[in-house]
Image (cartoon, rainbow, N blue to C red):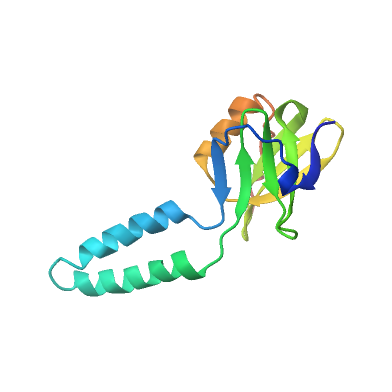
Length: 152
């Protein structure tokens, strides 16, 4: 088995990361900041809305912490540990038996079962691109969630 938990400094290098999921949605926040700055140059009441929105977004960009949840490249996916910032888990595409995206009230999870029976569970945010990449690199290995209908 090549999949394992290791220190971040020992991740095999030379691979192009084509997908990275972070906790802080920086692109969305920058987009909101641009729109809120444009609001500052409009007629009332938009400047007030723009000032409030830009203040909140600047605070979110500067003061809130950010960390990487996962990376994907053409050979493996890397899950970064939320408990130890120096550790990560590498899961090779060819060793994945099943994967499942699970929506929950508090946060979403990505569960990955390896061919040796190990199950890895990580917090993620919904991203259609992540689901497409999982379907492309772990083709036919998605475990569908069965939803039971409540009867009265």
